[in-house]
Amino acid sequence: MPVISPSVNYAPLSPLQFLERSLLVYPNKPAVVYGQAVYTYAQYNDRICRLGEALRALGIGRGDRVAIMAPNIPPMLDAKFGPMRIGAILVPLNIRLSSREIAYILNHSGAKVLIFDSEFADTVRELRQDVSSTMAYVQIVDTAPKAVDIPGPEYEEFLDAAPPRPGPAAEIDESDPICINYTSGTTGFPKGVVFHARGAWINAVGEVIETGMNWRSVYLWTLPLFHCNGWCFPWGIVAIGATSVCLRKVVPADIFRLINRSGVTHMCCAPTVLTALYSSPDAAGQDLSGVTIATAGAPPAPQVIRTMERMGAQIHHLYGLTETYGPYTVCADQPGWSDLDPEQRALVKARQGVPYGVAGAGLRVVDEDMQDIPRDGQTMGEVVMRGNMVMTEYYEDTEATAAAFRGGWFHSGDLAVWHPDGYVELKDRSKDIIISGAENISSQEVEKVVMEHPDVLEVCVVGVPDDKWGEVPKAFVVRRPGSEVSAAAVIEFTRARLAHFKCPKHVEFGDLPKTATGKIQKFVLRDREWQGSGRRIKG
Image (cartoon, rainbow, N blue to C red; front, side, top):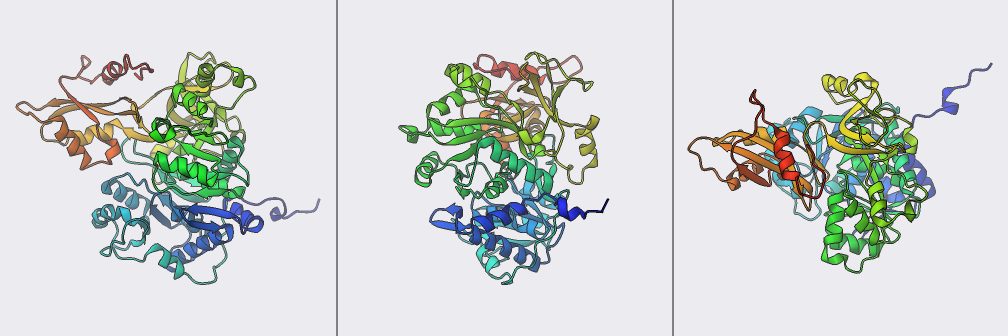
């Protein structure tokens, strides 16, 4: 038998292939829209090439980390391909984090460049003393003036200064890391989740399939592009030559305006964004027929799904984690669901569902011995996954990686039931994680900060119901003897040390329930807060 070169029948999977194809097929079609600016695929590719070459001119090369901190504006989309094109690794930063948290991520990842929007200049000023003095800065000037005291070029000037003829794109192996996405630090310090090219390619294709996108689609960026790399949608949109519409800030009036003006067909929203949409005064008379909305980040209440569908939207409920490139499952529609009454249909669609078609069968719900639980819709177990859509590792953290991959499966830490039809439904979280909007908050992280207050003797933080965010942190505090510290003072203390979304929204003073050995019974406080809320008790 003749030996056939592997290059004839095999090519490593990489999102760069998506860009090459759409540049060939749709060079003059709009790729990115932001306000009055419209970039065709040819122009978008040019910006990506110039970003890569400008980074290369700074000495950035294969394996180097490039951090970016910006809202949903064109440079964030440039960054999804620019560093990858030269073999560098992107580190997207949560714009809501404090300077201390950003500094930790920059140091841990070893980022050599920080591209940031001038709106966040104060954060950058505060962190500069805590990061490497050799770090280069590039400043995006969009709505806020340039911070002249921070060295480095303005972003568009940075692109313009790139060599006119781009060098060849780096050869990317499908196992190569292309980005590091940091978690919200739900068990302490944030962990760096490493995405490889193959997983990003496959998940992007899965997004396109499960949400029914094609070259005519117009996608509105309401989902933060820093969050799990926008659930891999930046690559999926390019894969089929669709159009991205950027939105700097999530404002319901602006969302409705862009849906109508730009012919938006798809968007992704955490349940809290959906709540903001339908509760807005601007929702009156809005017809969302023809708009497909993928929702995830926190389990949506059936009422949220029902209300959005009454406005005409088609809702796809997804579930996943940063460690699975964003969504891993979809509550796939079944024949006959459309015949159900709205309340029953919303109940079944509120489940987390089944794996993406491209994910295979790598989803189980197991007991402590890694045995499948009964598919009875009642027995609870932990959701575990494996396959191409699971991260490579936690960056520079072999211990956490080994713990997450024990038994040959990725352990989500989410507790669920398994229904007879094979659909998974989340019921609880195993480590007291608070999910506020689409952001994960570690109760332990908040407790540690509150305990730094000189007038606090003990504290316990749990998630409590909130109409807007689903749940928010509440601190139960035992004052030091003689102290009269106020709730406002405790909240302000944490706001100076944490991202504001992590800080307690409520503080209650008094004794804490404890076991005979002195351990605080967190579940007692949680049960009390959720009792009578009309929603599930989380304890």
